[in-house]
Length: 280
Image (cartoon, rainbow, N blue to C red; front, side):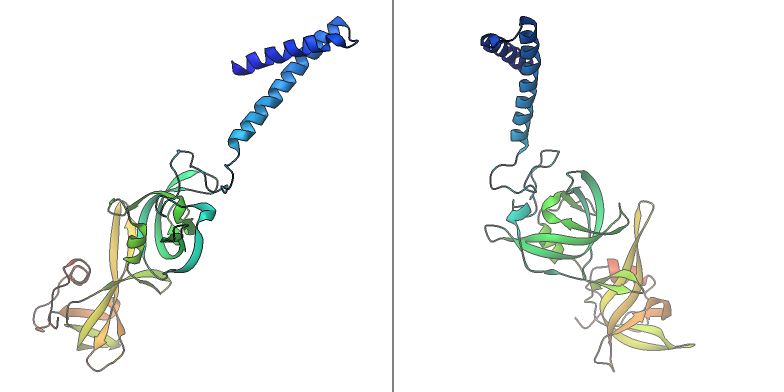
């Protein structure tokens, strides 16, 4: 409606304005109509461009998402060029997150990502916040980088909402590459245990070890996320350096008394409260 009224006004002004020119009456009407429409269209385009222009001093990245949710929720309210990379972060971690992500094309997608490392930045107020997350993306089935300031929502795999992304990343367990796969390390404080281990085929030898890490891999089967124990990292009585004991070479495990068998080693190491065993 505003466009039509504006065009009508321009036509009237042009019609009377051209009355002082040596133009035939028919041509005056044509000039007024087409000139009024053209000027109204140009004015509408100018108004649209002015609205689309970022505010002075604001980077193109510092805009709201299509859903009108401000960026920077997990980076202290700062985003885009207002964040400055700084030294810090962690490498070789494992942190599985479910996120809503607003990419550089301003498209919103739901992602399940396994973060393996992250860098940090500081805000204009000096707060240290997560910056770039390096992760395996299940949606793309490939390694991707995610800017923390573009994460709109974030939950853990257990669907708990993440309010402190930095704290969640700092608390994530370490990971290592084992036979080409990401393997998660869970610190253990369970004292000692006895195992029958095949140091050299075909013979097994029973040794007492003090585990320091249980290493496992995760895989989604249907809707279930399974954990597979891969190796135990720990000390033997005659070694000063930790060793890796592959689960595939382990024939049995016992509590420190040497008599009570551990029937489900994965549950014992990965799920049970870490207050078992002796030597605390």
